Amino acid sequence: MRKLFLAAASAAFAVSALPAAATIVIYQTPGAVQPAENVLFQGAPPVGNVVLGYTNTTNTRVTFTGTEPLATPSAGQARITGVDGNISQLSFALDPGFGFKEVEFNIFGTGASATQALLSFTDQLGNVFSGTYAIASGQNFFSARAFDNQFITNVLFVLNGSVSDVRQIRIGGIADTGIGPGGDAVPEPASWAMMMAGMGLVGFGMRRRKTGIVVAS
Image 1 (cartoon, one colour):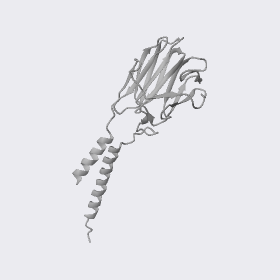
Image 2: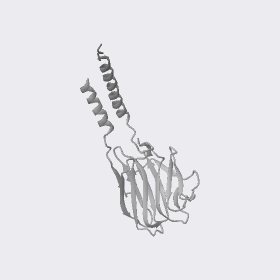
Image 3: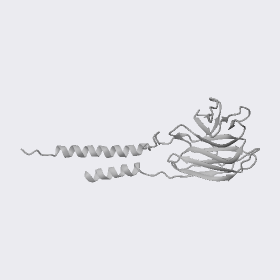
Image 4: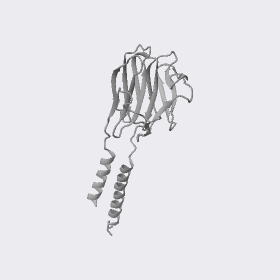
């Protein structure tokens, strides 16, 4: 029985402690990633450096944060910029505990002073995948995909100048990341099952040991 308990407990610990593979790949080719949902800016108006967007299918809230007051021009396609008509830094994320598998956006460089963009994608474990890319006048499509058990939880770009706006923002594969609000991993169903089995064996072993005790007179 003791050997069975130790085997079950070891298996439960091994399953719950398995590290997730960390892989987020960044692309520069338009259409390399085709996320399922468009992000629209038809919700609350911008408040200072923060804008709220919502996906067009699941109505998931996306929070955009800049280093300057932001604006969402209503004419044409959904886009976001600074109130002065230019933007140089922006990040966006879902509500805490949620992430997405795919993202695509267009850093629109018409009239841009920026020539480079530092892109950073953070996963649910806090790993950051980044790279520096050239910015041309006109359209600059960037995208990323998370593989294995990873989710993208934050996207950030920092330019060495400014561009007119960011547009055509799309995300896909929205889901609970399994990481709680405090940053702790939430065990998957298989992990729960193994841990419950281990605890059950502990209880069973303790009960048998108790019933086997002989009290001396």
